[in-house]
Image (cartoon, rainbow, N blue to C red; front, side):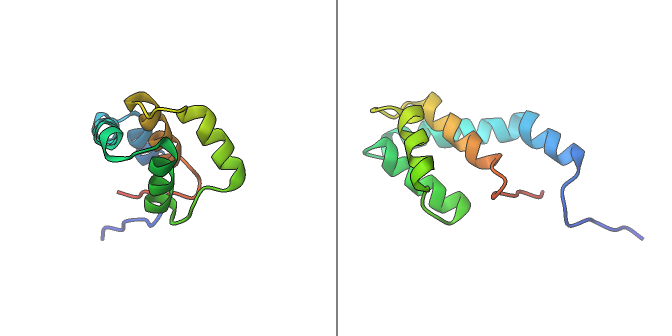
Length: 94
């Protein structure tokens, strides 16, 4: 009898944070997002809604402004996507 758990384990967590496939997906999403959004905050709000199902809190907005700056870059977008993927509110079990 095989049983598949409903929570991720250490192996899944390591693959998520260190795996090439997930890192490449984050990079592709960040690259595509730079031209799609008019402002860094529009990008952040969209990503928060897509990943966490909510808008960023006021404290999070202050951090987002500092991290993303005035012009959205691929590296900044990638940093935000990584922080959302590793956020405790976001769980990915694969």
